[in-house]
Length: 116
Length: 147
Image (spheres, rainbow over the protein chains, first blue to last red):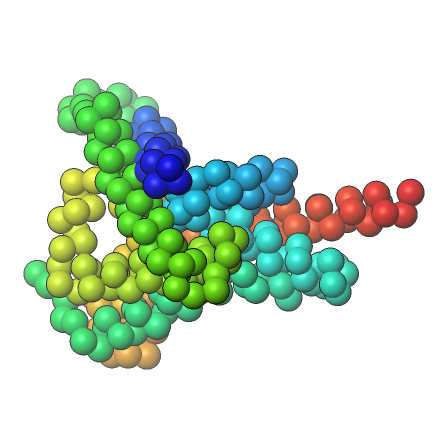
């Protein structure tokens, strides 16, 4: 069942992105930035976590979850170390997306040649 | 102003409904693959529903590297629009394709300097908005705790 909800929720988030591209005529950079900010704000109101429980990868795979997990890391660290934790805990949870992108980007640059 | 009006008249109409359906199907499909990877990690390794997002994202970016390197990703992205851009694979593709493309300028200036050319804004606004949100929440929890 979670597969079906992952499909529907993930698909709908992509449709929101497509609407921002086609109707609001934003650039892809603006669209993705807006979605990340939206994810951070949703988590601020405590709304993103229920969505992950409900839709699984449908909520963790879209880029909105990046904003969500940044807020999560910051808040978890802030609980332990006070207000300084907001800065130091930022990448605690979400490190894998960025580190994977850097590592595989480098490996890709070593092994693949640009096409065209 | 006049030029912009003129531009609107000659700009080809974007097939909105068709684009949305494509984005929905491809984006949903990528999330289903993500769910399959998550299920695998939860079943064979000790990840919970809350922590499984991290290895899932890393695996998806690895797959993206292969698809980008062999030149398939662009073709899928052409078809799917936001369906491939919005999932984390789009973020991975932005980083990896920039890295491969600027390889000819050397590893330090080319790959290092251009890797986050496209994806940098996502990180910037993600981190800054998360900072603001977490700051507000922390301050409110202090006020709530004190009273």
